[in-house]
Amino acid sequence: MARVVSERKDALPALAEVFREHGFAGASLALISAASGLGKGSLYHFFPRGKEEMAAAVLEEIDGWFETRLFRPLRESPDPGAAVAAAFEDVDAYFRSGQRVCLVGAFALGDARDRFGTAVNAYFARWIAALADAFIRAGRASAQAQELAEEIVLEIQGAIVLARAMNDPAIFQRALNRMRARAQG
Amino acid sequence: MARVVSERKDALPALAEVFREHGFAGASLALISAASGLGKGSLYHFFPRGKEEMAAAVLEEIDGWFETRLFRPLRESPDPGAAVAAAFEDVDAYFRSGQRVCLVGAFALGDARDRFGTAVNAYFARWIAALADAFIRAGRASAQAQELAEEIVLEIQGAIVLARAMNDPAIFQRALNRMRARAQG
DNA sequence: CAGCTGATGTACTAATCAGTACAAAATGTA
DNA sequence: TACATTTTGTACTGATTAGTACATCAGCTG
Image: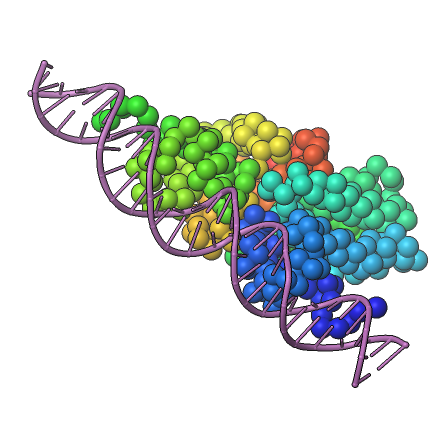
């Protein structure tokens, strides 16, 4: 494997932040280059198809992070209740109480949804499915588990929007606490 | 008053759609010109400060629509329960069951939030305040009314994100029905 | 009809955009 | 050390960007 000067993977966090802050359309190669510290030569070397490939790689990495950190524990942990509680903790930390945008949600609102439609759809579908799985294994009926999971993912997205709009992390915290109560009860 | 060929106000709906679909950064003057049918000459005649002034005018019109159609009835209707029910109907129609993006919410997620921060903040603050007012006049305690109002606005935003991400208006409908039940109970 | 005001189209500038080409540099390997 | 591979910087192209300038056109009013 090549580990000469830098690796494609190392650039992904910086790319993700640029897409988060400026959206797909607003993320120019100049911004991406400045944020990642990579020149155009390196960027097109790692991502020959340009911005589209960069965004796809970022989405894939995000998906991978959620899969290993949230979805798999929710599906496989022997203690589904603890997995749900840990998932809320991880969500709070990851989105920094609503001060960090969900890139997939932001893409869903814009025209990037058409470009990355299947990735966006799959991300939310698996999130809901993993949560519902944990709820079922915790003893809930299937239909109720499914609905509660959908509610929670929906409210997390709404909490990010509203907390950012009002610039108030407490909104995110309150929402998360309401969800915790419902998930346990 | 001049009503020669067209008016500034007539362009706002088309501008709003462009900003909704492409975001602030993605809404180029070429797109805006094509969508509105106005050339650059007319656009800069009506909006001398360019895109920024266009977006501000669109936000103001949206704010005005919500103020007259939702917020004022919620605050002033003699039957607050009916006003809340009507508000849900209007929200469903306006956002087309989640297939139409909330421009203010979309701005809140991107870097347009910094540019239009006060407008974004005020829009959601007045929405929550109007809903809370109706709940209080319907007999709820102040703190509970405030929290329920915040929940509902938050969930509407989340419902838009998730319904669009999954391309499924039924998600929006289910969320709205849950909110209706809680608002009445 | 004459003249005024506001609306429009076109041509232009300078900057920035995505993307390509390629030589130089850096690194790993023999 | 010599060679091959990967990474990087720079220079370039053509398209698109926001914004300005200004002449022309449309419609209203006297």
